[in-house]
Image (cartoon, rainbow, N blue to C red):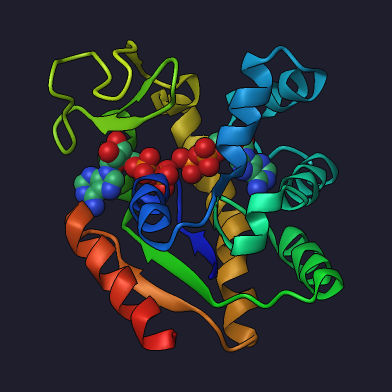
Length: 216
Ligand code: ADP
Ligand code: ADP
């Protein structure tokens, strides 16, 4: 199964991706997670990416696309994949189409999770992530068992620097200007499913699995 999850920052892509990849046994490919890991590992690419991420801007396409190409060369991607946070502009989408043609792979589904801005802001401002493993929580919607501590590995829960209010506004603008047109790009190709992301985490999961079940 080859899936792309689209949606604005805070829509629940990462949260739903975790549930879906467990069910379908495919790798979760989040370009945001890859950039954060590259930065943590002190790599040059990671440092460059962080400058853009902290400003709420997109990392340049040549860097991002190359990361995607490398990731898809790993053996596990032969089983399929779920992209979360990529493509994020129309040029990335067109580049990715070319890559899929080269690999003779077809997408099974493009899913767009839509959520109004006021809900996005509430979700992003309450988002907390594990400093060591990156697991995602929310101060009211998805609490850990012990406040401030990750259920998975006991790591400390922190707020992402780019989740601070000022950067969030910039990210929402970047989304509207650059990422939203990706929906139209896939609509023109006749293949996109719209999911109401204001439902509970479980309800969104059920809605996505229903659609994927009907497609396969
Ligand atoms: P994205 O990857 O699209 O930026 P996340 O999956 O990180 O979004 O979710 C953003 C925040 O909202 C997180 O704190 C998460 O726990 C919370 N969240 C995700 N989905 C829902 C939902 N359906 N209802 C309420 N809160 C949610
Ligand atoms: P969210 O969906 O919550 O906005 P992500 O973790 O997907 O967060 O992305 C965090 C940041 O990483 C983005 O704001 C952007 O700077 C960078 N990034 C992630 N994916 C891409 C991409 N496909 N193209 C360019 N930049 C990206």
